[in-house]
Amino acid sequence: VAKFGGSSLADSQQFMKVKKIIELEPKRKYIIPSAPGKRNKNDHKVTDLLYMCQQLAAHNLNFDEVYNIVKNRYTEICEGLKLNFDIHGILEDIKEKIRLGASRDYAASRGEYINGLILSHYLGYEFVDAAELILFDKNGKFDAKNTYEKVRSRLANVSCAVIPGFYGVMPDGEIKTFSRGGSDITGSIIARG
Image (tube, rainbow, N blue to C red; front, side):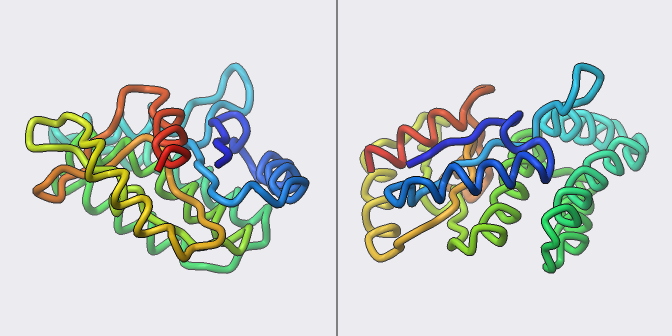
């Protein structure tokens, strides 16, 4: 299991470095990405922008300007990697869900989710949504027993996968995030599982 943080996946050049690191060691089979971090000191972390989008939407305020920053970051990464998949459709779907009242946790988790999709396409690895693996109980507490069972059974026949960090799912299907830095927790969970 290898986890890559936000600055490691901040732009297409960083994705290229990550691919080289992964390919140097064949044992690196399960990759946990964070959302894109800052490219420089004046830049924004994508997770912070997504939190802002959700907060604006919750107050019925226009969040297009902020969301366009997110959209442009992911579009630039895909173009820099010469990837050909429907990133625009994915971004529009997420924007619509935020507009319709998606939770704070859902909005924030999409940074890792999208980066996971991009990285899986770039590496040629299977994408396994963390919502399939990381479980929380009805009180929002991490459900270790059932999570480890899910991880073992779901990944048993998967040779290489990208699994987004930072989030999992509640029993009702709602996305639940760990605290900031939660991609490290995801990496530990996947390694143990």
